[in-house]
Image (cartoon, rainbow, N blue to C red; front, side):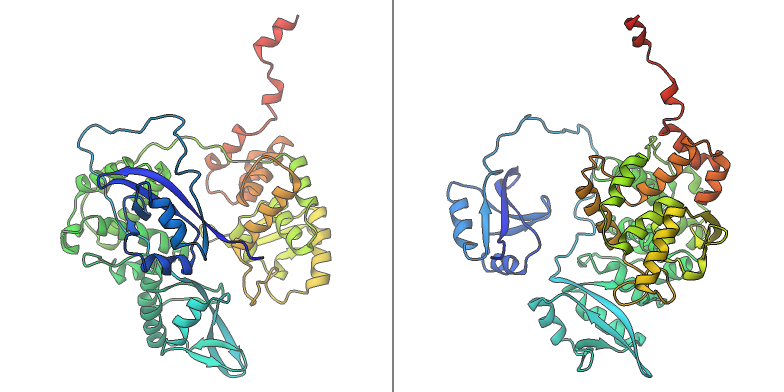
Length: 480
């Protein structure tokens, strides 16, 4: 029996009075039912659908969603453990409703495909009636009988028209082997998540071109584009020309207001400062002294690490040899996840027990070590999977999915019973920490990790147990 979607209700007070908030996983049937009931409306303040809260609300909602979802009112009636709320006294102004996310019916992935002399882009998606309806009505797509999939011609005009039509309804993802260099297409992809109101302002396409010429990665360009896009759309009443003329004081004021918003960490604001400095000083070539932009002081955040025993328990819980080899390489050689995905077969030197990392962070190449345990797994994996070019290939060829690797680790941790939580990068942190604890010189660890500065590597001295274990607490003297 298929598990029913649950709609959780909560109670909030607002300027419009008491509201009943609806929380649920993305579901097209629920969204359609909401559209049929005008008294359930979207609230930008709560970032959720809401209904007027009264004694009849819960009963009405149960009737509305009776055949498609379960309405859970447990949290609606729950009492607060502490009747406290943060209050800010003063004239701090918060930017609200900036770059609001647009609800989508689902997501599709564009996959490059070569069939004889024919080059196509295949639209891949999980079976979904709403997605199928959108795609079947798109004039830029064609049904391919042999591939049994919708396909798109890989030319600029067709792809742009397709994105302009489809991104209103669907979220577009790119396969790792599909590289986009056209600035207009990149702009559409970067902005697809947001609602475009009358006041919406796009970043200049030339800013994307400027970042590409500086050889920034796709992810970096996407990140910097977002932060500049946010700046432009915070000042709805200002033209692009006026915003481009901002000085350091106005940019400082913008970031000061961001600091006041609880959703932004100091690291996030630092990224925003970097992006906006690049926009003004690099792209616009402004003479404004942007060194005056205030950077928030960032606290020292220690990396999460597992003990060697915990990592062994995690790896021992994985039966799939490919999955086990992936995590073993990341830990045993201290790789970033992006470095693992780009590994080729010829990068493994089993005789010298070395691994070559090409085009790592900062466009640098380096060598790192391979353990005997890892090499044994690699040989078993190669014998079974026989990869062609990349060491680890995805479902459609090309790079393996970063999401899949995170999911592998998540399930392995859960199965192993290890209580300490962490992500894939925690394996790299653990590699460095364990090397340090075994007596490896910090300079060698820096080289293996590919750090520019030894200061970055020194963070592992704060999580290493090597010296801490030798220190005795003064309270132990009470035992004498």
